[in-house]
Image (cartoon, rainbow, N blue to C red):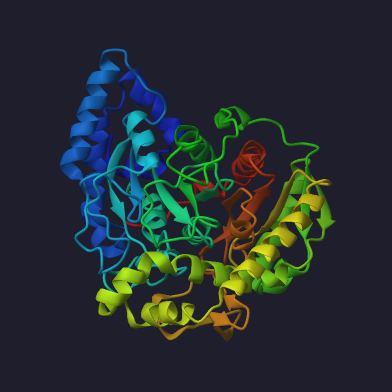
Length: 481
């Protein structure tokens, strides 16, 4: 195997070759690190590498598989972890200056489960400061760059994870998502990104202060929907260490992959999402919906009232409920925050507790609207982000050229990066972003497939059927050999 072959590899295609001994996890891990050495200085996808440990784990995988102790599809597979998820003894900065040298004394549950599955963890991926923005233009550690155009943003806050997967610097990554931080960068980097139902995947071991538990999720970024299902199989399930963890039974998600989707009903949510999309995304999204219909899915307009209230509820909950975890740092090390983050945190102190209570009532109101809509359809489809990836320069000035006009990236409604994704943080519904086409300038565009609570199976089934038939996943960024 040569390095260039990494661009075509997926976990599903690789697993059997590792099990049979055709591909050595040691050789594979060396190839990935060689690619990281070449491309990471440009993309800034990783902040900490674990090369010695990863190679040791790969060697152990070879021994175990050779002696007949194959653990499953992730055994010997190299992947990465976002830098706000704890790995024992490994620097975990959460994109902050405050934690620049912190090494946790424990593994997050998702990390423990990946290790138990035999995965090879390559290192920690870059992210925005404290996971508090929808891009990865980090003041302290520099910007992550989009593999499709290195002048452009990756999205965020799991931007390093998305860049790493899209550039084949690992076959999957675990990210966190409290406002779209798995799906947003997956869309902008042209890969699959799954935010499971709230409570489906344990959040134990997430860095405190990087997402309030009521709306935060751990999720999967991978090259394909099928790969997302294989990773979810390993990390899903209840955990006494996480107060939000659900006891719901965990199916074998890979069994839903490939099943016929004909006859399923797809809801098209009018109003809120229609008003958000810019023309480039609207054209691609509309064509993707037509393509779903050619697969035998029936589309139906559905209404979910009061969604326009969600951005305010999101801002209120996200700002207030994370504050206790920042209190000691604000009192002792305020200058270790970027100026913008410091202003936002201090401003959060002015939000009354009654506003948070109201925000949670809004969440429940909208959730009930989705419940009623799901009486009529199995899944819903909506855009992931309303516009293609802006340049890093545009991020710096807060304005981007979209549809031939200058647009503020944050307006009276909130952050334009997250307006399409936060409804499913607020409701906790499972949501998968898949690439549904490209802009005229060659930038990926994402579509979300949303399901009923704990029905990731149907979400993955529809996502896989669309992905395989449309074929967008076959495109890879040109990064040189």
